[in-house]
Length: 375
Image (tube, rainbow, N blue to C red):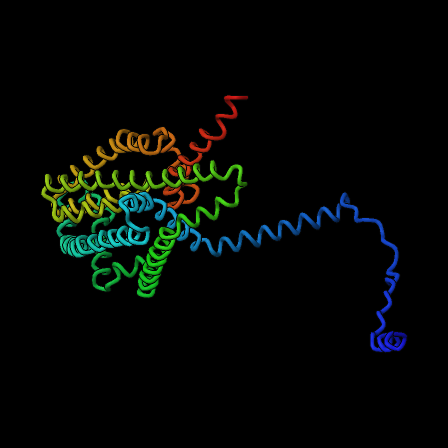
């Protein structure tokens, strides 16, 4: 036994001795957080980080706008997908049907509208000299032309633009500007379409992931409020489409009554431009008036008067009733939210303002008002 112990003692390496920590000096006093230099350094660092972050957001603002528009469209199409799912269809098949229908509508719009628009533009260019000659027949305008040369200068500029072929390229900064605008618009449209498809297909899983960030005790209530907000966004999109469809039907019958050309094309144009908040009807009225002007000034005057009358009825009667029924928000809140959103964020703000206002009112009804009522 003693020999075995000796052998084991020789074969077993000695355990290393614990090294004592080196003396690195005595700890000094902590930093004085009340010192002006410390406060100034933190403030300058925070400002630098904030400026860098804002510049990064500004450089990627166009991407964020496309993402917001895609998410908005996905939430707007989600009720239709859920309605198809209630008929025992899978979500993938429901999304495919909705996207195919949307692409079919866009294709129909392009086939119906684009050829008459080019034809109408050519007719307007061909009839421009006759319109200028008819202006000279007016005694007042002819006197202004004799004194200041208004009509002559317009005719000269028009003839030079037509002869040089710059009537369209000049509006976009030359030939390269036209190409850049077309490519940028096509890329943005393709990006929005792809992102909308992905958001629409994965919306339940994405919302479920965000709901898991909430505590388990409040997760169910937050999930219900979030689903209600998404449904309100979908109701807003459906309401906007219904309002735009009513405007398109009105313009279609207006064109038939006034015997304007391309009544179906005008209706399809209004169906899309009426979805643009605040300025959509201004664009639509301009297009309808220009088309009517190619027929006669009287028809153009009737078109602008009747269209303006319909817009007032829509703003003060149709839109508040539809929004109050679908979103449960007062008409005044709808108009004020659209005005504020457009002034702050432009077109995107105008699109998002009303559903955001509906979401805020929902949160106030479910969270804020019960606390104040019980206080």
